[in-house]
Image (cartoon, rainbow, N blue to C red; front, top):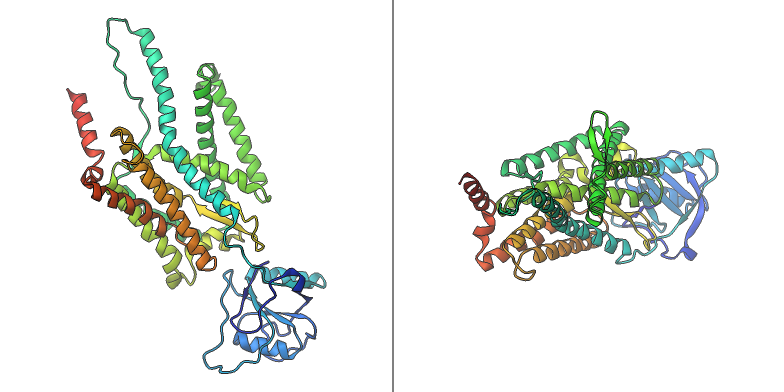
Length: 473
């Protein structure tokens, strides 16, 4: 159970061997704003926030013989307790720590059931936890896999189409290799703006109306997307390694003939998702959530596409300001960060939504998870895939192209995000604040230096118009 020390009073010992270990006592009155009637000698006082200054509470419980004070906040955020401006001298020698509302409720319930002993110390947090490196590799790996996956799957389709057509056509007829038709959704400027606006509306609705049933709706939607993405990835891998495996079909009522392998994989994916839902509160459940999330994002990045840098600029700039507003500026209007509150699940009993990748902190004595939202991967990922297509069509090498620089910029942006978390004592950071300049900004600067900004800006328009003209001839 974590807390936040006050800017006054003594510091907690950093080592477990020197920790304060005393029985916990709930003060009477619970706000500790007047002389308490409970015996606090040689105990840790538990008090609730409100009705008087924090220093006043500390002075009262200290005079009653308490060795420390735990202040329960009236919300899930931890508020930094400071000295009032009119206080010039304080004689507070005990440590004062604030805990969250849910933690305070738990402690109060435990006290009602019997005696509770509390151990207080402040272990030092490591500068870099291995979970950060692992999460960094997962985010970049997702984008790289999504980049090469389209080429990976299209090459297989081309081979099958070539064999099918070549066996049917005579030798006198010239074979013209056609590109396979893909279900692609090109994002427009209006669509980009509309998407960010709807994301804001959805975020506010989650903030005000997040209940258990809403959480389960999100779980179901997440599982549907994860199952579809996992099914697509696994079938693609099987068909790549064994071309004949997907030729055997079976008849299904109301559906028709489907490949047997596809049906078996679908059952496996459904069983995997159901198993994760049942065990989502287990300590290892993050593994299943990350697998489903990565597969879903790879599938989304195969369907959605940015046609050019112009649309990418509109989408990423809107997402840039969206992230900053809902993390840093929303407390001005909502009294707390809406993005952080929804991510933590403050209004849903502490249950967080599954639309993120998370990895437990291995060497952090405070525990918890390092997380990254799907949007922090998908938005820059759309741009990186655009750069990959541009380099591939123009036969650019890694150094002379844009894909390598976009991927490297994304990695640097994630590093800056984690540095921001460290220097701001773990306060939630809008990742797109760092990712957009390091990906979109770097791409625009590089294109400007090469004199190719106009080409990237209108990329897709000219090629599409030329394709239309070729088809009409």
